[in-house]
Length: 157
Image (cartoon, rainbow, N blue to C red):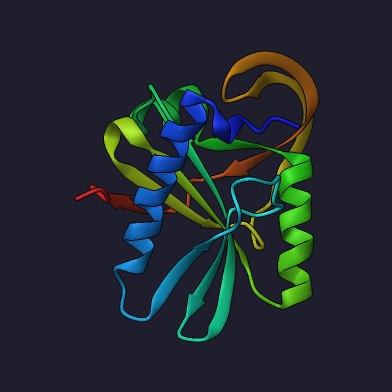
């Protein structure tokens, strides 16, 4: 099975996810431990403080969209496939930690952070881009309200 992360667009996304990881790691004793990128992991990272797991992370990088556009064109809702959300939420529940969502708007260098374990996620079947490399697919998606998300500006510096 070929993973999208192995493609040129996937590699760009991986580099941008590492910007998110470096931002998280800036706080003393905090670590964003990426899951293996050569397999389809159910979450993108395990978040730790010291030797304790404090959460799991679903991280997405979005391109060609500003924070203002996200708030207006997408009604401040982040779309993630329901299958990915459901497995991350179950895993977080089993570990008794929250699942956090990190949405990195690369063009604005803005990171939106939400506790997905507490979010009221709307589910709907919609046609979306199949993968980072394009294509179309109809599947069940979760729409995460990001109105109350923590907003961090200029995270790559």
